[in-house]
Image (cartoon, rainbow, N blue to C red):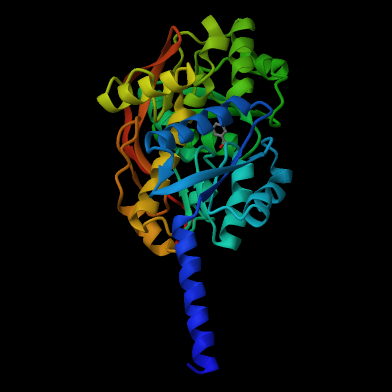
Length: 387
Ligand code: BEZ
């Protein structure tokens, strides 16, 4: 063999062993979630759900052992690019999984796109992630902020409510949740008469509660989540508003929070893509398995983490574990029907779940299923040019 041939043979062998390593070594998963702050418990539930699915597969995905790399993103958008780069550039992860906060998720989507890294978003609903920022390597296992808001707008308009005040945190999730709500509510004949907001993660609600009492609307629509949601619902009741002006919301305001909210949340109606009493065999099995593993009841965040792992498994199985085959990975996920505890769902052309949104009512410690508020609701994916 002459030297050119030897060099070529070596290069081919090296390439083959690199591809082999990509498909057979440990699969590196970068978990970027909040471990501190108002969304810390949401991050824990997502990680629990993700790990539960992996454990159910014997600790492997597509035959590959899994290794986790973790960063606490603190729900802080100003640190998000650096945090995502730690996982992508320092730890060289094969896939990014995160996060809870919409502002942080948008930074992750930017990093994922620039580096052509797979990203699965297990909560943050930022409309832009499956809108203008959409991309072939970006998938969401949760919802868009628009979805539960839009469903609740329809529900409240159908109830004949006319005059509503909204209250939320001033950032993408709050703005977009209210935006979805307002779109459907005003289409249905209602009017949003006042939009109140405070900076994330501020919980000094008193002045705004006084404004609500003075405005005397038919009802209030809200988006809060985690620790902030606990305090808001308690403060609303303590201000004497609970029995005077009914409080409705995107379901995050009562998910994973009921233990701490106690009676202050009782009877509240919310809309979300999960409920505590679906009673399907799939959900029953999931709830049992989660409770056994963690001695806790699951919530919507746990389901979204579990389904993020399911989406990853679908893509990985299609490419036999070789994450370099991004187009084939995406094609498989786009065709898939994810067998979620929430009920089966598919992904839209912009990679957001097309799913039933449930109307739920708080009873005891549960968000009880009432009805399907919006069947197979697809986010419009405004501004997404998939390429
Ligand atoms: C968000 O920032 O997108 C978000 C945070 C918590 C619950 C739901 C949405």
